[in-house]
Length: 266
Image 1 (cartoon, rainbow, N blue to C red):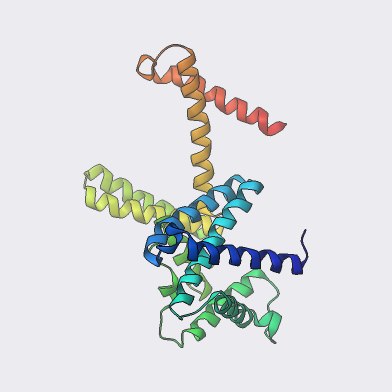
Image 2 (cartoon, one colour; image 1 turned 180 degrees about the horizontal axis):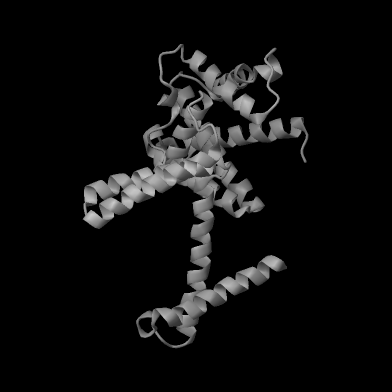
């Protein structure tokens, strides 16, 4: 691993290259906050994908891409004499120190849950009480992640189940209400109840310390692997999907599952 001096030198070289590109490259010169924003979203998702795969080499690469965008926005702001990368770093340091009084102050917090509860109270002080508990949840978050963050923020101010097992009564209640509306074939009501059912499931995941977005993505990837195996076998048979019954396709699907179990044992 590199020393702190080597890390700082590398960061300086990176800023030098960014400055050169901004001053000399036609593409870099024309970029604005608005033009970079779609790329930033894409790069963030690519980083998340690398993290899910636990691909160390790819994580390193994607972190660099995200870092480029952070520094690029700061460079654009410095040209307008608004702020620069040093201001970004200084403000972050100030915020981290303020939000960790159990490290930099005299507040006691021995567990991660205690730190998390203190965090929300501190953030409210930062906002001078002018914003609500849930105002810190970005509207642009994907709905599944947003639901988790909403529930977590409510928990941090004491609005939560006393016993986590009690959440299953709510899940069953919401499922029953959904089934009633589905039987009525009321699409609007069914959509509403399906949302309530999903919200209750996400709540259950949170209470049992399961990240529902990660869990769903693992299942997505598992389905993709198994379906790709199925598709490969169908092609090798010289047939098409339409030529096979569901039972025949299930044979290949179960083969894929068995292969995964064997690989897990290795």
